[in-house]
Length: 428
Image 1 (spheres, rainbow, N blue to C red):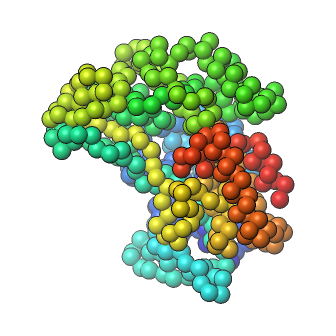
Image 2 (cartoon, rainbow, N blue to C red):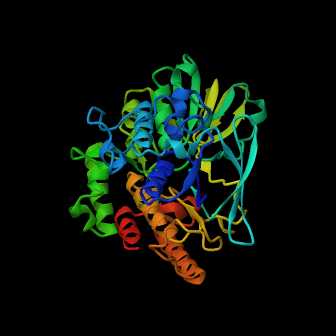
Image 3 (spheres, helix red, strand yellow):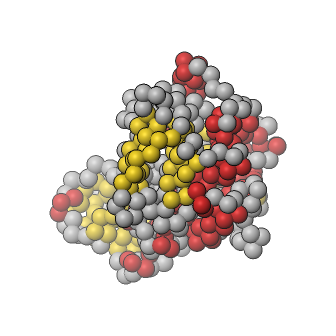
């Protein structure tokens, strides 16, 4: 076959649709029992970065595919089961289900001397296949391996349960318990708010302040604000001043809620979007605490000297990107950064592409659709890539520029600004 596509979540289905529309012969390998990625896992009871209270943080209008919008009956921010149902309906509408092999896990992807790619995969019955392809598209996501901090002193004495967000399913599993949630990212605030309705006590341990934004400002969803011409016409400094003033009016200072103030300007790191967490703090359901200092039997001791008994600690400390089936130097380079031309092409591995390995402020859907259409043009010969040296220069320039805004963190290398990135992809 011409192309092997890996993954049938939101990004993989966008790629499948683009390949089908371009008349490309392809097969899609998906390790789960159905399409939908993380959105189907909570209802299916599968381990993964999803939980029963999970909802979209971006609007249905901008998260739905352009050619097949989400149903009008859906709320503005659908729950996970609605998103999963929608993704299944999109796969049916796009007529790509016959191309998808479910319960098939990719073991290795290797480039041969003749330029072809050998993909080894194992199916649900344990059967192993080795097939040759001209091109490979990876759309398996970047929330792969749980990232856990260095265990605090005394962790071996802790008498409670230690979890990562990947193992969390529902607040009712912790009814009547005392629980400490660690982190201030999207999963941390979702899980803390969810737990606070069931647990006897919910503490939110925060090491570093992040900017917490509501889902709407001035009655407009944040991702619609980001699309407005008056917003995109502003410089970054103007955008920062505008949002900072709007947040000060809308919710005051984060320190008023007992949370640490961010040590960086807004849009210099990922932001946390939540309508619930500040309300749950004000209602006493969630109590902020500083970082964990050490554990002592059933007690968690924090860096301010306070302590609390805990039945469970839930680490919501993110994920590491991992692609164990790919060559070790791809797509993550020696400095830990993702090194892809236009965030899609691996210059040292001709014929290998990535979809969805980006992090925008807002919905990712239009970005993965644009990436997929561009890949389809490359695969069919309607677009031609530059020489590897030119691609590597673009990568270096991009990483240098993005580091100026977001710093040198590994996760910063997948950060993109929506409008200019879309223009860049559509221009090729």
